[in-house]
Length: 306
Picture (spheres, helix red, strand yellow):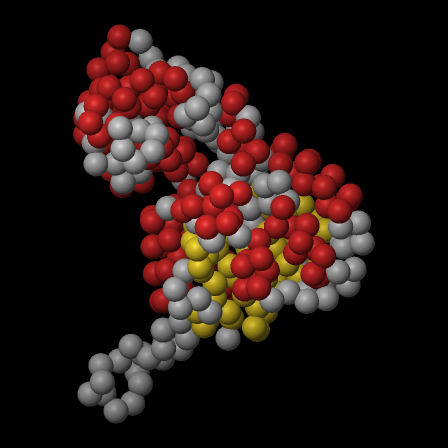
């Protein structure tokens, strides 16, 4: 949804833009072209491979635009931007979820279509918690909660029970082991509908391993603080949990006075900080979904700093 993102961010020559989820730099290259030689492109990623590949791509495809690539998690946006020594930012992009390069490397353990070690860490260098530890050490109740809340899996209890039963025989070591457990926990009739039966459970464990929902709210709040007046923050989310967090935060930050209507003078002092520019979330066109099936669940929300 590149074009929709660029239209929402409204970058121009001389802007400072920050791609908080650099990945393969597909968005960043176009953002760099818009800010031009007088602007600055900041890119954040916690994956060393992504940073190296993105740097080479930006050098090749946007050679005239100054750029700084920062290793870290966007939950630590305040510290990262302080280290970059920028006074403010005109446009932030958050493209949530796991990037295509990470999905396409079997050894990272993100994909249920490839048998690989149970890892799922976006930053293996600093994050010591991996998927194997979650699945082999968490209690049945905690596993069921994670699968139900983060994966919205209606068979969470059954899958959690099967995980505990299997690991008593031998630890779960690979993504294939996890897929087998998931299939055993979901009734055969339910497995025949709704796509791959492991999709929701893999999502849930990935979110737990990387604390994704915790850092999302911190990162968005920090981005709004760093926005220059009329600057914009644009978020692409891929599941309802992320989208609800973005929607709620944007609504809270765009709300004015909350005093009861019978009070003649405002005493709460609440003033709107942003204006939501997407009345409804933008979704991918049928043509884009045909080109990129991963865009099927994508939703874009955007807000502008007042």
